[in-house]
Amino acid sequence: MKIRASAGPAILTGLLSILPAVGLVLLPVAADAATGPATDGGPGAVTPLAALGPPPVPADNPITAAKVELGKLLFFDPRLSGDVSLSCATCHDPAIGWQDGAEVCRGYPGTSHWRNCQSIINSAYYRKLFWAGSAKSLESQAPSAARGGVAGNGERDVMEERLRQIPEYNKRFKKVFGNARPELPDAWKAIAAFERTLVQRDTPFDLYMLGDKNALGPAELRGKELFEGKARCIECHDGALFSNEKYYNLGVPPNDVFDDDPLKQITFRFEQFAKGVSEDLYRRTKIDLGLYYRTKQEHDIAKFRVPTLRYLVFTPPYMHNGVFFTLEEVIDFYDQGGGDDHAKLLTGTATKTPVLRPLGLADDEKQDLIAFLESLTGEELTMEPPELPRYGVFE
Ligand code: HEC
Ligand code: HEC
Image 1 (cartoon, rainbow, N blue to C red):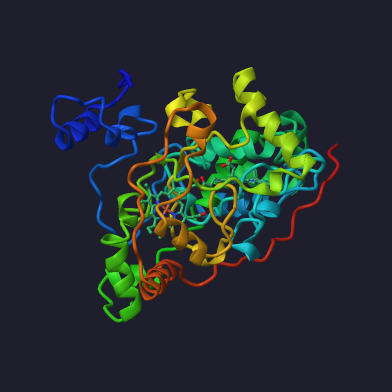
Image 2: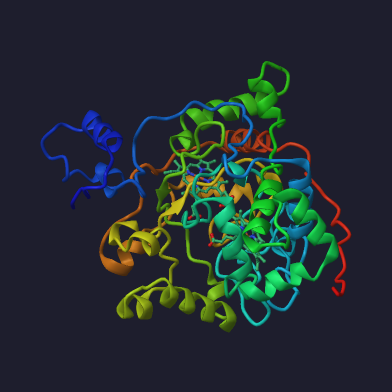
């Protein structure tokens, strides 16, 4: 195993502090940490749990009320898709936790998606988006959603012309961005600004951390202690977001919905091809290769970004392939030390994180842990779809 030149000093320091200087690259515990900045999982410093602050806002896309209002209309507007049948809200439905409730998400008509749809509540906090972190910002994520073949499948110029043929949008874009006509990049900025308002910072957990000691009951507090201690969840789900934003293979079992659904199989194969997987792997893999698509490093196969644990109550099913329906199933999975290393079965290279091992949780401890997880969700954040502006004809 090699440490790539790009491995940052922080990672190396982290490694050196936990390993004797000799044998650095041989010990299995270094497996996650030694794979460069993109994968840098494995043992390291843990950020204490904390109340969530306001989300970061990029300097070139400040939030204004008019921009958020425009972004909301666009988020609900199916004209930002190929056949005007899908808006962002079709898959990120406010009534279903701002996701779609399916194990594997629906797709553009005639296709299926191939991953579980993420909730966009609190997505404003992530530095990298998607299950394998392939988008860098909300601004750059939105066009890939509207244009991607198995999501919006919209043609750029056609979508832009549609916006230009809507008088109300002409007015609103001009007011917010100053350009004579709606421009698609501005549409993505407006949607991103809207998404930055979809955050939840007043959960029982946040209130507790801000000083309301009655906000969590005894079961939740026992669960918190387990989370930070015996159950070791905090090793990856840390800080205010409950995610260290690193990538791990937990051995999540494959979802057999792929086996008997031709549409899902087509998308799955298409994605291997589109992401530049070798002919050999393309033919053999039955699992989502995760971070591997970005790095093409075998040691990144089946690694996924640690998701936040906020708003979970409204967002089952869980994991990148939606294979677990309840928090009980998730806890049982961790209690067993995770699942089989499907990456190793595929290529011979083990990638499952050494952090997971059997926890020996008693039934009441599992219940306490779930009570704590539930305290990371507050009120349901619902929203009525707005009335969309109509097309008009220009002189
Ligand atoms: C066909 C269903 C579908 C549509 C339409 C869709 N999405 Fe998504 N969205 C998904 C799925 C599935 C994922 C996870 C994809 C992955 O990880 O590869 C996702 C992921 C995301 C994420 C990343 C969240 C995270 O935790 O990293 C954001 C943000 C997002 N979508 C916003 C949007 C916006 C904005 C639109 C409209 C322009 C949109 N989506 C349209 C299905 C959809
Ligand atoms: C080694 C790092 C690591 C540890 C330790 C860990 N998790 Fe995770 N967790 C992840 C990753 C990575 C995912 C996404 C995996 C995937 O989809 O393949 C995840 C997913 C989840 C999900 C699903 C979230 C969603 O939106 O689908 C829940 C719930 C969860 N973890 C809870 C816990 C709990 C509770 C513990 C402690 C018992 C724990 N995790 C320990 C890394 C970790």
